[in-house]
Image (cartoon, rainbow, N blue to C red; front, side, top):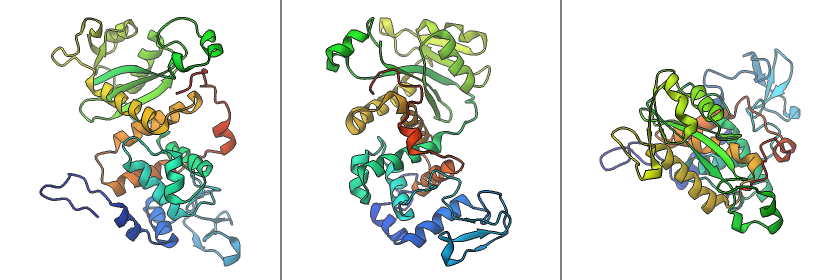
Length: 324
């Protein structure tokens, strides 16, 4: 494992060789996951009882709850539930996802941990569920902006192009985002449009009242001054920085996502786009932690979340027809 010290990063990383030494078998992976999920001692994920014992070999699960009279494991009550993938492979998948700045593709993961591509794709989406929770409002100053995600019109079929009316970002998905300058934390999500009601609503939902908000000149942000301090830079006339007013931080976050979109994933369906956006925001928000802490944060976030394959592939109402 990498060590902190002179000339070293301020955070402690883990090499792939060190990870293999840390988790040489299924037992070591299970022990680590249990230490993260149950930091104060083992308890039943169904009823919360601490009255648990080792289960009989015939139960198929390692522990038995004397409260609800059911066997359980560390998988129960999380996105790992009903997964047949060994826990050691889950640990390596979480490591690869958390240490890859631009994410990891399902094709690469299926080769790296020896599972099918379909299984790898499902695993990655289950890991992304870790960032589904609601975070506290940012105290500011914050930068607010939006990006458009979708295929180029020139690359669409003639029939698809005919369905799109208007110019510019028509037919693309909209992602709203804010970045706190003090903590460097990001909030981002797919939204339905770029109206004042939508974009200002997003800022109000994720920013503490009275905070300073910096945006570009988009008219949708004009009403923010009622609840926040507000300054805008006019990109339309080549103004990108004016004193403290700029949106360079959130635009840097957009750049990372777009590079991953083009270089790693190539195509993201609009209906699953929000899950990718949450993943990038979540990974960004824990990037200052040691690698093992980043992995632990993902595992903790996976507890209490469930994602069924049938729900993942079903239309969740976000598919606007754009392909990211």
